[in-house]
Amino acid sequence: MKEKIINLLNETKIISIIRAESSEELLNVAKALKEGGIKFIEVTMTTPGALKAIEEFCGEMEDVIIGVGSVLDPETARLSILSGAEFIVTPTLNFDVIKMCKRYSKVVIPGAFTPTEIINAWEAGADFVKVFPASVGGPSYIKAIKAPLPQVNLIPVGGVNIDNVSDFIKAGASAVAVGSQLVKKEFLKEKNFEAIKNLAKEFVEKIKGAK
Image (cartoon, rainbow, N blue to C red; front, side, top):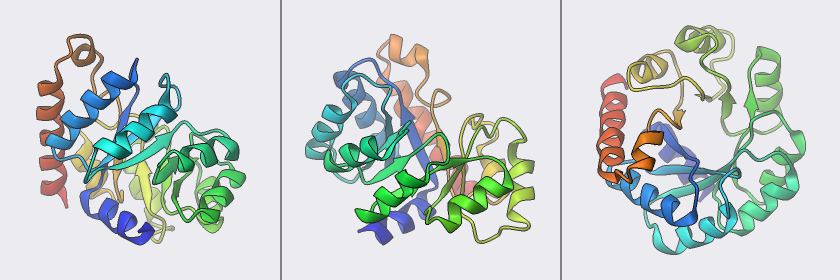
């Protein structure tokens, strides 16, 4: 299962990050993203009732890989995994979280920025390394990191949008993760899930064109 997830992410190359106000809103957004062609959805722990929402997702959302983000410690990682999360994302490099995910054979994507942090995360067993914030350096930074570290699967986060997503993929990113530039606040406020679906389609098409 884990290898299939890694291969699918390498193929589809995009994770949508959701920060919603309720589990109901979360489910509606997830359905819109799925209809737009997004197969990976990251629910942040900053979402109210995040773990309960994960359990609901796993029962209702077929063909979508659900993960949990903003995980700060191994205890939260374990609870997320037991709730059904298939991948765990951290904002910073926490070796204990990596160890916990390896124990349960789940995909782990720790956050890092400097070359030293990135290689340390990779050597500790990261399946992908989240480069955050990607707004600092942009696609050229990803390209620069990939030159000496071509073996590391990088996922830029923070600063990826519809205008530069192709550039990040062309620079060597294995995938990208997109939050408010896809699930826009105004869309959520207006409950405009159709707009979320349409923007998701745009991201998917841009990525296909850049591969």
